[in-house]
Length: 399
Image 1 (cartoon, one colour):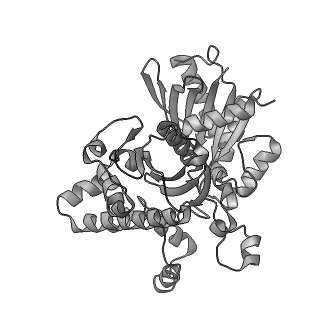
Image 2: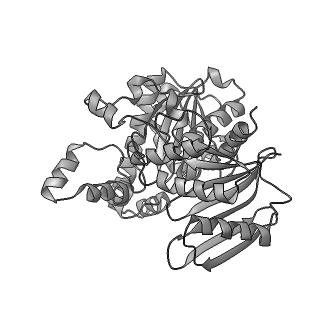
């Protein structure tokens, strides 16, 4: 029995995917959204049969959303009776310093995840709602929490410690946690398998570039440095998030614009990044406008690449060299221009991108570096749902 139902729940929506871990194939996927609004929406796709259903109806809470999902499985397949899930895997963004591994959910674990909402107020509360609804809908099954932060629990103190008052930091649990951990873990392991070398022998840098973006240095399979910090705001320039910024900027805006903490939060997370610079958040739009000569888009692209190069150089120094650099997620997998520009200045280290390979549009793992490149450069499609399913199954079937 290798079928796992993966749930990725937010405050007003949840995505799901039914996966056969043995074949690594999804059997169905769906989205339930606008939960709590006057009219909600649900989409269900039977991947095997390629049939899709859509519905609009009231979905007052997550429990009602799970009833909608179960009805979609019953009406459109695949049958959960014929494909019974062994366990339910839940993506949880913030595990704090409490959760180092995928964890079987009981009442105490659920309480702990809820308490960690103080560190992830935009993410953990939704996860808790999804967990409660799922445990009620599937009371007989094992439920496993897989944490975005868990892969980064191997960060050394020098990497996760902020240079602020240590007592205040301890009181409020302020440190670097890192995110996108399931993606970085999946990609670094897939890259090692692809190049045919033991994971423990490789120094890797993984660039997860989507609307949210992060970079991780992986030494021997362990995360030793990552760009996101206490929250997913720190680090690279992203679609609508600023990434690294002088903290004094917030003090200036608070004084001169009379911006409240909530205003500043929205400003940094929703009105910054390439959107703040160019008015669009999608890298495809940035590239199109740049090609057309739009000055704002040109600057946004240059700022984005400048930050990428800065992190690449820093992480190569931290690792003492690099064997494999992998690009993943929406931008990383689909933008030859970003990949080429990010690595353009690393020729002195023997990093050389093959222009023809880089331009190929494929959905599989592939090399884009030249045959004589000192560093192997890959594009590795991420699969966070499969990684969550794998970790869930390992916990559910242990012992």
